[in-house]
Structures are given as structure tokens and as C-alpha cells.
Image 1: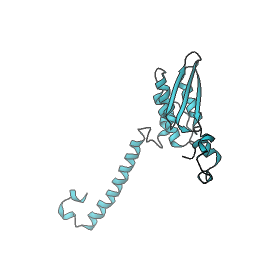
Image 2: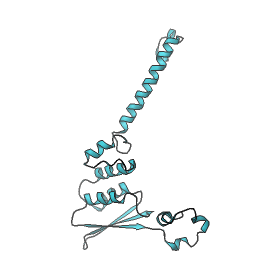
Image 3: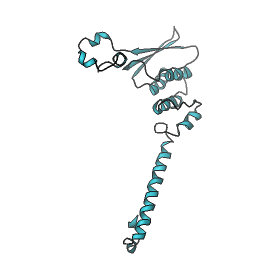
Image 4: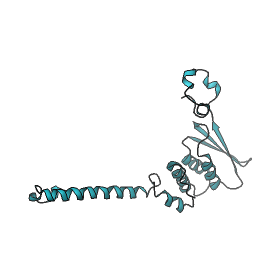
Length: 176
């Protein structure tokens, strides 16, 4: 900021102190503005996530991690319109950190969602189920298929590779 002032102010200790204090204040203002701007987008919202949840009629649960709460809001945003396989897939993928396959079985009135790239049951399965229920017509049922690490896949692994993991970790995530 000193460069914007006339030259004789650049050597003044008083003016330098004033400019330094104003610079610090302006830096804080800039941070506050950036933080506020982040609340306008679900993907970066933190303290403004409550407002997004209220806007979409979602009950706020502060005990859930921020990324799961964001997933719920994003899913609600995406879940409007005619229900298609693509819509169901978009809604489910908003929650799951996995590639999904969605198949519909018209004669059985069933939609099957298969988790392809992730092992085990997602920690936020209840949220996924609720979001799918919210967009799926009432006459359709939904079935979730999960992928697990099989014992046959452990054959070429050593005890040393597995001993540091708990049973649930091996079952849900394997030794990859």
C-alpha cells in the first residue's frame, strides 16, 4: 500500500505503522470475504451448510462429518425431475465414493444398485437409502449389492501383510 502514497510518506515511521496495521486489517477482511463466498457453494460450505440443509428440508445432524452432510445436500439438489436410471445413479454417487451400476427390473418392480469400485458397506448407507427412497416412486423396491474381499483372494497374501489389520478392515477393504 505504501507504493500508492507520495514518496515523502515512504520514509515516515508513523505512516509505515498505519499502513501495516491497515494492511493486516485488510488481510483479515479478505479472509472473511473468501470464507463467506465459500458458503455460497455446497462443495465448500462449512458453517453455511446449515442454511443449505434448511433450504432443502434436511434435518441438520452436526454429529455427521461435513462431507457426509454435503453429500446429502448435493443429492437433494440433483434429485429433482423425472426418475431415470441416470438420476438414481447420480443421487447414489453423490453419497458413495464408488463407481455404481444401477439396473432396473421392470417385471419385479426392483432397482438394484451395485457398488463396483469400493469394498464393504459405506459408512453413510442410511443416508444413501433415504436419498434413493426420496426420489424413487413408491411402487419400486431397491436392492443394494456390496462387494467384499473374499477368502479366495487372500491365498497369495502372507500373514505379515494381514496381521496389522483387523478382520473388518480385511473384509471391507482387503489388503490392497
